[in-house]
Image (cartoon, rainbow, N blue to C red; front, side, top):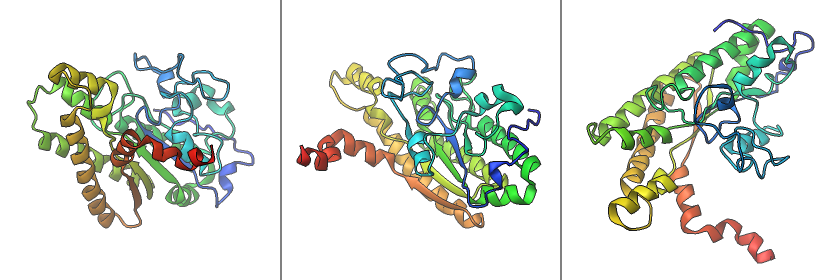
Length: 289
């Protein structure tokens, strides 16, 4: 991909040394419109997506309103997630300041593995290539040393892995043992983290795989197999095993890569808490009511 300068060269916001950028990579849990710009059936630019978003219009988010990328960005004093990389490309050099907030690369359906939903999404490997283009832009704009310093302070938020598990259960026919598949995912994750590190990333916020066996599609599998309602245990078992393995992988990688810091969110337990004890979420509010 050719180099494209998409920040203004006059009074760039990137010259603020205290400004931390947010870079978002992952799947539909963090996509804020990437898939609107690619040819794919995996889109969310139609109702009822966006019904609770400002303006009640679908934006390409796979959500009724703001998603995880938006909520994270708010912690960095942004109104919502930075815009999608592919959206920035449509604006060319006329786009003045949005890059200076960070960029969202996440794509609905994306996986750790390139074969996951191939040709229908932007896989994590390509998202990292897109980030490399952004890095080149920043370096051309503010210089290599300033770019390196800024990226070292910025947050790289990654939410991915669920689609790999979905595809595994849909296509593997049990040919690949679960442990072998987990090792494939871990190997890919390791390569991706190291690639981002090589481009200047140092601070990572990583979201693990939730209990995907409790999704409506997975519950349907359970119903068809056992004639009972509930989550699909084999899928949840794989998701939980992957979280534990990812925890160990990140610990090892961080000891190898100087300056790397990370936080791993256990969305498996968090989501099960919501499913099993939803009243706890609004306990304080319910008391007020």
